[in-house]
Image (cartoon, rainbow, N blue to C red; front, side, top):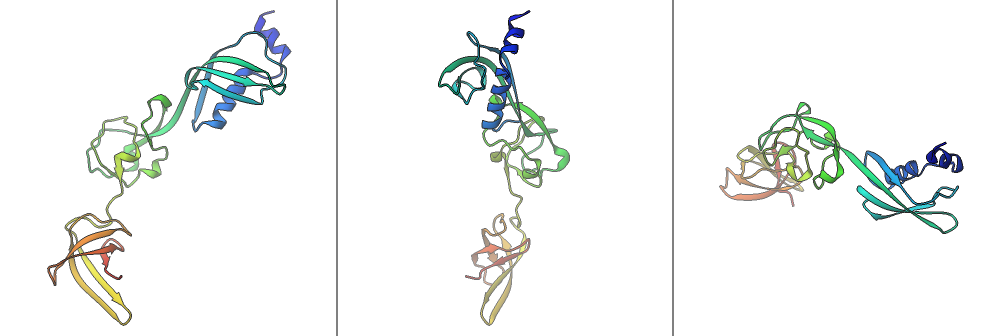
Length: 208
């Protein structure tokens, strides 16, 4: 009878499964694989009440299993963790508006994840690329921006409203504008540059 089989008969829990469950519960990763787990001596019969990370946890990790009686057991393990992220199907140019067939979801080793990687395709659809990207590139929040509600050079309606007064003038957007944000517009009546709020795809409000 092998030593591993004898050990399995002595304890009713798996150190490998305990470590995997702890990591999945405490880290925002989609999949975790624990391999090459090793430790000295025998494990207590009861499951650990806590697991502390001494090194890692990804890669060649070192962990401390804490047990109900206050004792600790040092455990070495190789840990691989992956996260599902949004990636590009093909090369895309700066200024491209992202569509469903431009994107797919794939797993990436968490050690190679860019900061603020996008994990939900819905968070990227309809957004505009701020830079050119290659195929199979992980998208991050810093690589995209909202699609402008009003584009620079677009004709707009400039509205000014107060109790008993409603004025509408034609204008031109001097910059890209986003719903609820400030935008500079040129009044075609006064030839002055004004600052208002974007209300919709063709309307800028000067109402205070």
